[in-house]
Image (tube, rainbow, N blue to C red; front, top):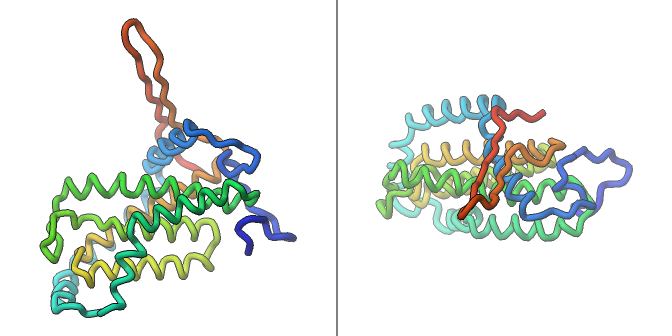
Length: 250
């Protein structure tokens, strides 16, 4: 399939969000408003099922957690096979890839590809914005004792966000390799003793929620349900912020 042009003879899916429209000139203000709407869209009934599954998986992961950590504590279990995971799932690598795809997509007329790249850029902002405060809040010690930023796993969150966005846009053919690679990245963090099992489960849940949310909103015609405004008032300024909740998308 071509990323730059729709496949001839096939019905292209509809992505009515203006950011996917090749004729639309995207502004910085629209990008910020869309980002705010993406955060607001996390608070949705559509997030309940993934949260329930993620919470259940977290609970189940606590059972073998100590045994798995004991297994990896014996040393470099995977050898060189575990090293690529730390680089593949690094935020600089995934962030650079998302920005590159976004830049390429601006010259594309394929609405699906434009939607994909826009979702990835938005997701790469949202994922760290959610995981980093949690790291400071929970202050969980890593298995290797290097610092207290174990929970949740940022590598897992970013990798599963990427996999989910590709899966939402290109179906199971992208989902299988995408989630397999994300699972490898998450497991490699266990092998390097950077995270506990529950850390990567929590990170994967966050990544899935973010990826699904940003992708879902590209199928929504309206650009934003979030707004802000700053205007002069007397000797200063008055700012207003608007967020419409609850937010659900079809």
